[in-house]
Amino acid sequence: LRDFAATLQAELDELAAADRLRACHELAGASRQRPLGPAGPLLSFSSNDYLGLASHPEVLAAAATTAAREGFGAGAARLVTGDLPAHRTLERDLAIFTGRPAALLFPTGYQANLGVVTALAGPGDLIASDAANHASLIDGCRLSRATVAVYPHADPAGAAAALSRPGTFRRRLLVTESLFSMDGDDAPLAELAALAESHDAILVVDEAHALGTTGPGGRGLAAAAGIQPDVLIGTLGKAFGSAGGFVAGAEELRAFLVNRARSFIFATAPPPPVAAAAAAALRLAAAGEGDRRRERLAANRTLLLELLGPAVAPADRSFVSPILPIVLGSDARALAASARLREEGLFVPAIRPPTVPEGTARLRITFSSEHTPAEIDTLGQALRRILA
Ligand SMILES: Cc1ncc(COP(=O)(O)O)c(C=O)c1O
Image (cartoon, rainbow, N blue to C red):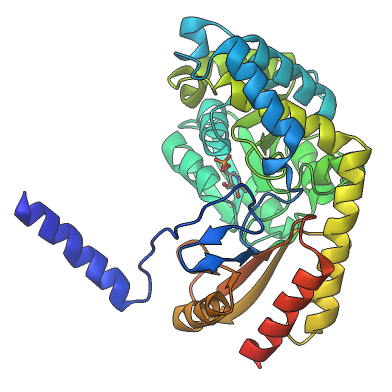
């Protein structure tokens, strides 16, 4: 066993030497924007709690009430032990929110992506996949054993070429995020939808970062583009402040996934209080409260872009992205910038390969509606000093 530990340590040492070692920071408190670190209070721009709903009183109350009524852990997978009211209610609400006939909950967004791609594609199928897609989509592609054609990021011509790969395929899938998690940019959804149509492909869109934050009433970038992907995927762990993932689409898709998505079939259902918390957050996000929070989120982004200027921050986009990358290049440079910000009480993570391509290590800033203008100003001043 000592040898085993030593071989692991040797790999960890190699990672450290390459500035690639990762570890989780210790935080406390209910706020994701103002957590408590070991050395005192921090101002965090790292969380995907974009609307501050993770600590909203109505979300907390829904979890507590449902825990008392339905218990905490679900007890087993739903095909084994059955659905609880919190599951059914949340799925109905998600279907209404996304404007689709049906929705199916998964324990996490990661498992939703894994389950969808492996259920819909297998050997003899073709998947066209954006080069910047999230690890969970990549893992789904790999596990599916389908032919995978990776196309250049957000490039419709590349997607068309990938979909036209010669060969006889049973089914073609076009898989993309709508709002990319590390670049904060958007996919050309209208063009991709047209391509899927003309190539008789199934369009799979992961809206993990877009639902709640963008589009009409927070309904995401597919809704903003006026398209209906065949398969829409979301998470409840980001703007909806809870945990879990879901797939929205036709009733037949839902029934198919219940029978074929292994990450649904063979995993314990989400705890009912977690589902109830997500349902409460969804109600807030879809209502006037959500609109007000999205306005504050947009204002925070605009303010930071103004403070940083075009030399540091990329040109503004047609939509309000809650994610702003500042690409610094080397891992060491990104790590040093993050560490200096941390010394000033600012928590902005350095994102390194393999999460992002080689040579594009970056600071990844995420905005929340709950950051105050003064806090954005503090971040802006610190970034200007550190990046000068
Ligand atoms: C684009 C994207 N899809 C899926 C996921 C996974 O969702 P979850 O955190 O709910 O597992 C993430 C991040 O976590 C993501 O950024």
